[in-house]
Amino acid sequence: MITSTELREKYQAFFESKEHVRIPSASLIPENDPTVLFTTAGMHPLVPYLMGETHPSGKRLVNCQKCIRTGDIDEVGDKWHLSFFEMLGHWSLGDYFKKEAIKMSYEFLTKTLEIPVEKLSVTVFEGDRDAARDVEAALAWKEAGIPENRIHFLPKIENWWGPAGEVGPCGPDTESFYRMVGDEEKDTKDFLSRPQDFPELGNDVLMQYTKTKKGNYEESKQKNIDNGDGLERLVSVLNGYENTFEIDTIKPIYEKIKELTKKKEHDEEEVRSLRIVTDHLRAATMILGDDKAVAPSNVDQGYVLRKFIRRAIRHARLLGIEGNFCKSVAEIVIEVMKDPYTEVEKNKEFVFSELLKEEEKFSVALVNGTKKLDRTLEFLKKAGKKEVSGKLAFDLYQSFGFPIEMVTEICSEKGYSVDIDDFNKRIKEHQNTSRKGAEQKFKGGLADAKEETTKLHTATHLTLAAMKEIIDKDMEQKGANINAERMRFDFNSDERLTDEQLRAIEQWVNTAIASEATVKMEVMSLNEAKKANAHGSFESKYGEKVKVYTVTGPDGKVYSKEICGGPHVETLNGMGTYKIKKQESVAAGIKRIKAVLE
View 1 (cartoon, helix red, strand yellow):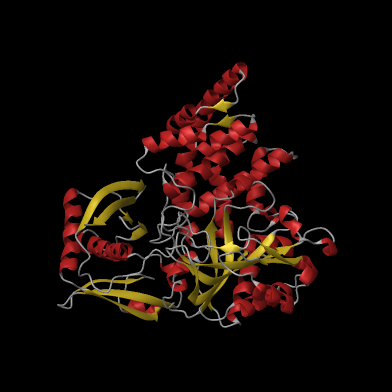
View 2: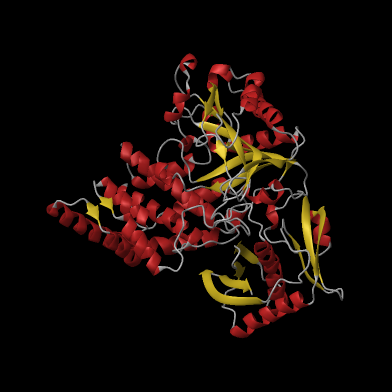
């Protein structure tokens, strides 16, 4: 038997023995990255370094990253899919490449974890007009020890990564799968149609190419390795479990929800609901417990968080669980996850209060909204119709807070469809900016380090420095989101800033810009950075070596000194005029401003 704690340590220790440096998990909310709502892989915080910047800890890195993915939310409820998961990852930033990476992956799986070779199958890229067949990766697996009949060439849809936007690093990947059942001699690539019997264990992304603005794929100057192994799935197969809901970080949550149903036996549909409630409240607790303090709302991360909580409550009601129960489940999640991710316990009161508020709000809406939907479905049945209008779906969203996914799920269960196109049209008219999907937010992609974006990134540092000097030295950044048009900056404050305070912040930042201050980057240890009075938000995310950016005027005045990964301008000259356009509340004790450079 192996625990999640033991596997986290085995993985990181193995790659440390291969000269990798351990780095901590980043936040679930990407910092200064407008392309994604959540950190969906360990590579997101490393994008500048995959693009060529020098990482303070070197070219070989390893960690265990907390992640949220919602692309497979409809699959949650089966044996393997999870919304929140932990990704074991290691990286080569322009150091070793395919052969060495595959050899390490094979050694870790078969030697360190002692997985029998006959249980493993791998897939590689079959090639197309953009890039050649990945014979090199296939040969590396064969030389490592995987028989040729279990090395399968598949098309780009299965074995290619990226770019994450329109341009940037990308390349073939190679994936490893574990055979739960069946005869190894009959192992063919048909196993991909049986994911319940052949769970994917890990993926080596071989970043060999860069996609250009013209749509061409060119050989990258810096070739990278981005490995990701699912911790929960590995713990499952290593312990002989048939699904991830039996592992040590999930089973206590699942058992708590079973206990709340007051039933001893559950049928197949009820098991699906048990898994959905488990997964969604686990994900919601980890999002709420993050230091960046996301609260339920109708936009962006808050929308996804609200969807997790409300979908969990609905499935709990299907199981016969009544009353407020989310806190009792969140307590189990926090107890299980507090050691690797200390912030979730530190922020537990915020977790509990936000869950309770959302639970009370939605419990009433669920009853009333479901009654309205049921009446509509009964009317449609009598009329011989099978489609719910977009108008009704929008009314349920606006009046009762039903996410459209919940409306379509309820309707689908009863044999009805929903006019999604009409719903989307109405929601776009209602909101200035529509939600563009659970993960992809803006065009441009992870490689987007446009001049405008870089200027606004530097402006976030100046914003925080201004707040600390003018308003309160204990002001802290709680999150940031930047695209080429604007910056969004979240900070801790119980009260809204006055107009006078907002204008003072603007004046302070514009004075710094007018001074034509320069920006200098230094690599130093975390202790050296603290001694140098460098400010660092979310300190738990830093490794032993950090980058410190100092903004200094010609007269020697230090406007900002902050730990950060970049990118930044070299001088404030030419940044433009800083203007705060809007202030709003995000959650209890968290405010947000939106600002531009004109």
